[in-house]
Image (cartoon, rainbow, N blue to C red; front, side, top):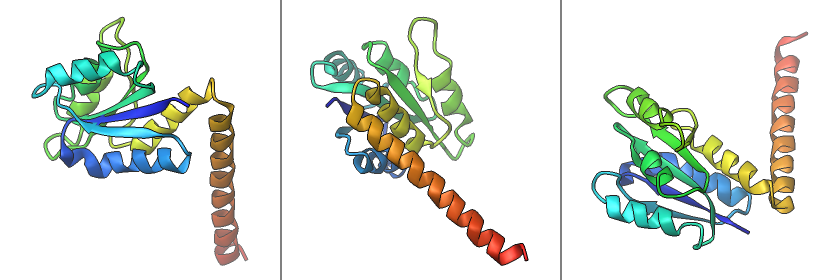
Length: 164
């Protein structure tokens, strides 16, 4: 099974990135987490991206705030799918990171989830892997079914409380 790389621009991104790691773990998908900065460690970012496929990765998640060039820097050096997580910051609430992540030039795509949406980044990674891995597809189907049941249980409880 292919694994997922999770790269964050700073250790301050870990509280958000942890949600992606937890989601992947709950689906039985292997992953690695690294801190690489597009600006402070550009050579390491490029080397990681260039070798990601041969190192067993199928998808790369890149989380960064502010200028948020990490996902684009990774995507420039690999043809693996790259998913960007714009991280919320104190300055512009993450809008700066969202725009930096989503506005990629033609030919270097980055799939981008909502600000701080690490769970969706992990689920999108799982969906990409599930294209060629039936076990991952089955675990995703089960998660969706479980999520549906939780909503319906909450609806039943709400109805019992208010709809008399």
